[in-house]
Image (cartoon, rainbow, N blue to C red):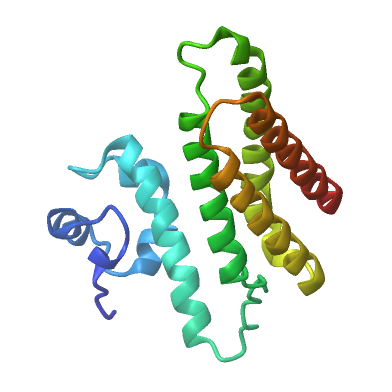
Length: 191
């Protein structure tokens, strides 16, 4: 029987490999087939690591046997559409602009803007949630949808940059309105 390098299995180092070899386990196949109770009894393994090693050995053995067996069906790879790098960049820029606008629009000494600021915070929080979900399903969007999102993200980014400088009533209203319309658009695309 040919000896395997058991250290290729996760959670098995040189010391555990020596202990396993002393117990008669010399291959990954043997390690994957050994009963869990017997594996737990080997010095330096214990119950927790026995479960982890057993799972890792079984997985490793399956990979090894599928590579060596030409009759084995090739594993199907999931096709994930690549996320448009421009869209990814625009989302990052938009998140940065939201953060900057949040800092600059804080009504530190002006209580009259507090209600507007709270409304702005709620809408920006909603938008951030939509942006986070957008990054999850961005690969599934059509080119037209992606272009539309990029276009609107650029417009919102410019608005946040220009109007998100000073706490004024018209600035809060404009920024909040833009954020809300962009959020609605993202929500419609998702559904």
